[in-house]
Amino acid sequence: LDAQWQNFDRHLTEGTLVALSFCADTLARENPDESIIDTKELEDIQDSVASLLELVLNSDIPQELKTVIILNLEDMRDAIIEFRFSGLEGLKRAFEANIGSVYVNRHQMYQSKDKSVVKSYFEILGRIEALISLASGAKELIAPVLPLLMSGKP
Image 1 (cartoon, rainbow, N blue to C red):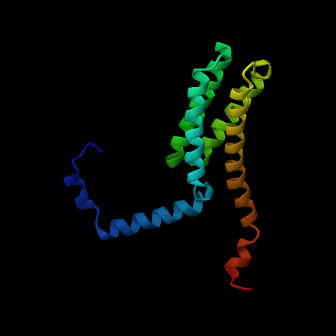
Image 2 (spheres, rainbow, N blue to C red):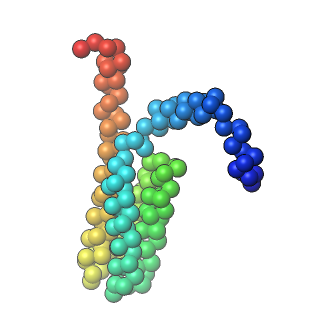
Image 3 (cartoon, rainbow, N blue to C red):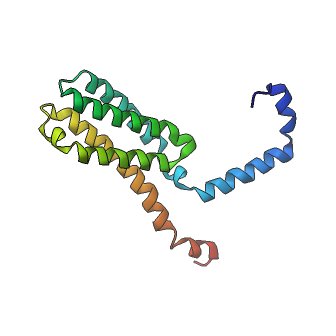
């Protein structure tokens, strides 16, 4: 990886590019979740996370709750960024960690005087959950029909 591009590009023959194409096709079939996730929606969620981070930093909620929400949002933001190379599993992990944190800190969230911050946080979690459910559910809905489509019968 430390080599100069001039030394590396000679290995990229037409045969290598064809092999890479086959690898990409196989990876797409083995892990179809990535093609189901709407990247535009994911980018919108990423923007919402950034906006909410700014809102939380400037809010009057207790410092302990502020820290919890910021750490959770940072984890979610990292998972969204990493989605490009780690796929759906990173989003699932971050979502599950956020839900666990919500449960542990539920009393603080319920008693928060600034309900708009907590409400916005829950809205983002809901949007992430919808994306994950869609990706997982669509995969299950397609599976029973796939043999019929492959058979070529009407």
